[in-house]
Length: 248
Image (cartoon, rainbow, N blue to C red; front, side, top):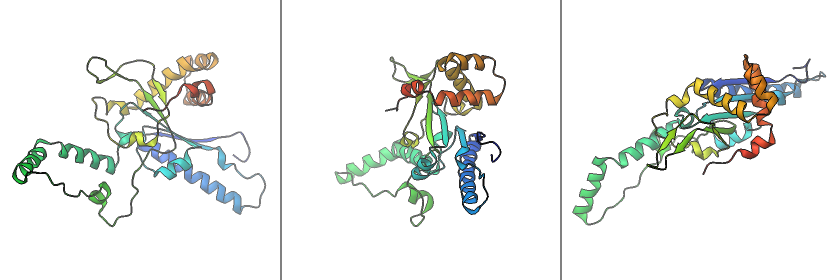
């Protein structure tokens, strides 16, 4: 990196590897920055040339830390990928919702209301207290690292209102971190996490939406470097960015 100012160090990974890549990019930037400050030599390495691309990464950062790494970390998720929403807090929230809506719990509330004439609600402990105890110092919520790009191939069926996953061009979204706070139950929540599904969606987006010269390169692409270069060009394309929206 000292010898070639144009050289970029890119960390990338899928699932657990994506979280490691984001943390590694953060640690490397901080280490290079500290080394540059301590070094009196010329030609210091550029810490701003370290980046991370993460795919199907779990929520591992606080919102403040995720915002801090957003300029150099991009997290890609797709559809209802379970791992991108998987944390101790989201699991507790899911179990809490399921038990609150269970037949046994609803029957118990009905009997209490019949006996007393009204239903008194008992104070519930927070998710953090149930998991870590009332004295633990933990974050209120965790989110995926960096800037978030969501690939959506789910379409709502007009007949039954359900979500259907079809092989069509993914819709690109820039979601807010809150989008990943709760686990989305679907028949594809496991298969949506597969590496090959991410690769298929990304190649289809790049091939169909990128400029002609990039699409031609992708048609012949045989290396990860070519695919990464095309992805970088796509993300820097203002026209493509304008087509990305925030899910509601």
